[in-house]
Image (cartoon, rainbow, N blue to C red; front, side):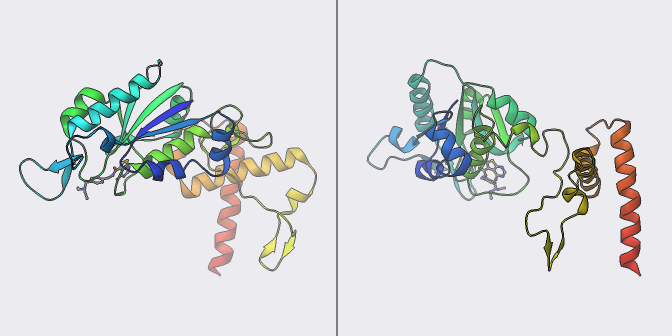
Length: 253
Ligand code: 9D3
């Protein structure tokens, strides 16, 4: 997959692709991230990419022409057509469903804003989709682009090792992950749950499923509204709730 990023801070975006799973995906040629700086397509000695806000008020807005010329250059760089995605607080929220959808495309173009944002007319004419990564204020689109690249990059075939798999992820089945433990089995901070040492693979799978269901119920009940639980899942969740009640009682006394 190829991802082109239009940004005033290309080094920042490139740095974000250099480590861990994404770094290896890039090394192996599973993912190709190219950056484009609108300043290279700006005119005049000052290479202006922004100007003051029409109607007054603080801040600056990114100019149409440098971005338009940059996007034209990006489109010329490969034959494949690609959706242009603008990272912005006004976008729909990025979800794992959207990540999966984008990961299946051969190419996407990401547009990062700085300052107060981009002239609305450029968005109307050149943007296919607007995405936000959450309800908090960033100072620009670059970190959001890095988040999207990370999430989409690790979904590429062969990006994760044999032992990992994107299908095992939290959210892939709409539930949170179960707790994980490693050695030592006995520690000042507590013991590893006995079932994980039992060697009973069916019991371990049941325990993990119960923990996933229980933690989702405790921490993200909103996620449970979007999944259908079979009879076994419902039993496991009921069991978790009974044990949880018992535990919270003990703590009260
Ligand atoms: C303080 C400026 N705000 C005035 C109400 C508007 C504003 C403009 C530009 C707020 C944030 C930004 C920069 N943010 C992004 O480019 C961005 C973003 C974000 O801030 N939150 C979540 N997702 C994203 S994607 C791009």
